[in-house]
Length: 487
Image (cartoon, rainbow, N blue to C red; front, side, top):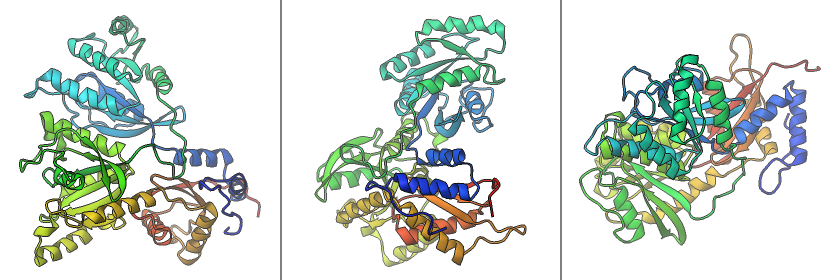
């Protein structure tokens, strides 16, 4: 296997014509279907998937529609408004195209008033999306709240597909037609509960969504690199931003939750210009939050989505919490480069440092690959270490391994550490390639199912061999029935 593929990609790291041809030849020799292999490579090699937001007032059937789009019951559905509070993202597919679906929450009365709550939630969801499905209850018709959301949609300028839900039969078609009055174009009559009309609506969604961007290895967006500062409330994010900026740019107060909106700051640090985003702290139980804190959490998630590197601040003077772990998981699942900054280091005594190291081993063992800096936002201690850590994480995030070198490495693994025999069979990795970067995405083609433990072993060995410091790795395994391979 190792001799059949040679690293021949161009200087950007993409598969060159000769290398690609050899790779596909190997796929044929191993009995794989070429169209499926090409599809797997294309799916893994795409950049971020386009995002579809499902918005609408409470109890119009948004979560039911999301479940229908997904083809499975994922979103919580109950016949009362306000069940969904969190913004939840799922991956969906229709007609061979993949995209993300964001199920947005219902809105409740709070001190800001219903209209302000609706505006905050809808504005966020629309801002973060590439296209929007606006769900209206056709049996009720357009309400004042619906009209308010329409105004937001018009201001945002995003493509909108109007879903007239709860049209369970021909008699409801007239109700759906009344929604032309909203001025958003054709209303698609749908019964999310029974599936009626969802196919036509999804066809319209695909027309509204952009194609998933093609992967460009190691390419960077124009302008300064984007750094999101994330962490629990009052962990010192604003203090850190002020320290690196050498001026009071952000309000700092001991009252947790002072920061409501992300504040973008262009800052020169270590001779490099960066764009720092100071985000509102994420509270432990998002679904119990109300008003400004609730929307601050949503905006924090948006900041991570837009960033390239997430710097997660942890209060070293306190035990590592579930909130800390959840924030780290959010950054990893978003595929962002990751740096862990332990703040308030200057306040620790020897005993606390000892126990902190034990906590890091037990609670954060799954992210040992993330660069770590011990800092004090108050005194400026070790701030000079922040930039090298960020640069290291970015370098790992954009690393690509040539296909030939990767397959030589995989061949060595298969020879020295074969997969355990299960049920009389021993699956093995046949060949693989890195289909994308930012974060690095690998596709491995195997003769059988690879257990989770063996996949984790492969990831550990990839990191040992090629680095990938500061970045999550995404590894997909494709198993195909052999199709008449000649012996």
